[in-house]
Amino acid sequence: MTILPLRLSGLSYVAGGRALIDAVDLAIGAGAPTVILGPNGAGKSLLLRLCHGLLAPAAGTVCWLGPDAQDAPRRQAMVFQRPVLLRRTVAANLDYVLTLRGLKRSRRSERIATLLAEAGLSGLAGRLAPLLSGGEQQKLALARAWAVEPEVLFLDEPTASLDPGATLAVEALISRIAAGGTKIVMTTHDMGQARRIAAEIIFLHRGRMLEQGQAAAFFAQPETDTAARFLAGQLI
Ligand SMILES: Nc1ncnc2c1ncn2[C@@H]1O[C@H](COP(=O)(O)OP(=O)(O)OP(=O)(O)O)[C@@H](O)[C@H]1O
Image (cartoon, rainbow, N blue to C red; front, side):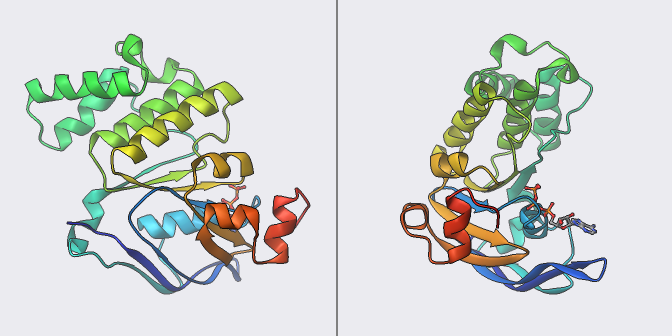
């Protein structure tokens, strides 16, 4: 059973007298990753926060339409551009969320070992989380979100401040999480990353959704001039 699809209808968010998200209508279904793509300031983070219920819209609705919709709050998680970690060890960060979920101690140890191995962090279990590198911190944040087995995982520019090597390592972990059946909904302004990860693209510009479709079709033949110019590396 599922909480998906997620439907946004006439969704707007206003601040400082401006519609920063402007009448967005779209639906996100189960399956391979959906990437919200657009230039800096397009409204990608705001849209993701609205989807996750962290912001209240000025108009319109965010509705989970699946048969398990009433479970939506606890079946979704979000990871931010700058990971928010506890000042505890790597293992303790994972243990904390698993305890909150009510897992018994014996099951927690097993699950923590698996998560650390999947995230490539096994050697760092006893390290204090704030002392990890940026890439390691982001992998821990992803592993911690994954620990609660969300059906939908929202990722806001998860590699924005990472170097190319760390970026690829984080992308590999995102792909593993997606392969495990979690629906990834992720923002990026990085076309290369969108090409590597997305099955579906939502293209956002100045708070409006200009396109939604299969990634291969979007990159081969965008429907709007604005997207075509963005893909050509021009200022839009
Ligand atoms: N609370 C707010 N009040 C006023 N303006 C805001 C507020 N929050 C965001 N904005 C503005 O809304 C626009 C969209 O912001 P948002 O962070 O969603 O963009 P983004 O597409 O995620 O950009 P980036 O790729 O740079 O992270 C920006 O111009 C931002 O300055």
